Image 1 (cartoon, rainbow, N blue to C red):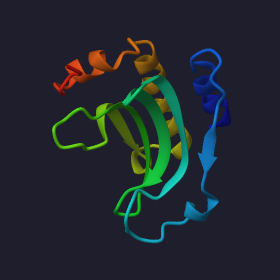
Image 2 (cartoon, helix red, strand yellow; image 1 turned 90 degrees about the horizontal axis):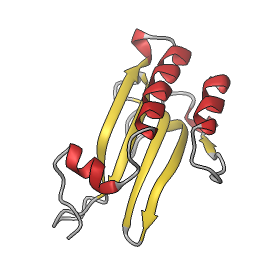
Image 3 (cartoon, rainbow, N blue to C red; image 1 turned 60 degrees about the vertical axis):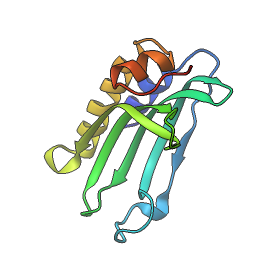
Image 4 (cartoon, rainbow, N blue to C red; image 1 turned 135 degrees about the vertical axis):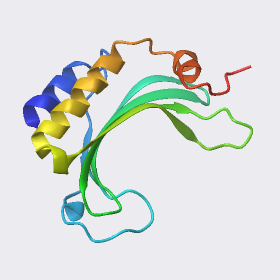
Length: 135
């Protein structure tokens, strides 16, 4: 996983320092509750201007059923009439029960890196999933 994390870090935009958040208190599943019990995560800012932004994310978390999951996603600021804060324009969840944690992390990271090669423009990603655009 460290090798894969280093590959993700090398795909970050120039000048962006890698930040990984680690929550050792979430290593054991303690049941469902508010929020996603994340264990490890990183976010890569791709665009941030005013109240518009685009971000790529990679995290390891628990499902509500107590299974480990690795998620890669591209999120974009919400421009809907009702403010949802964010929308996933793309996401991939890899269940750890069908792969080892390392294999799941590598698969999600590989997809994240492919998304980083696409335009880093919120309008492009909103068009992909038919979300409202900035007027």
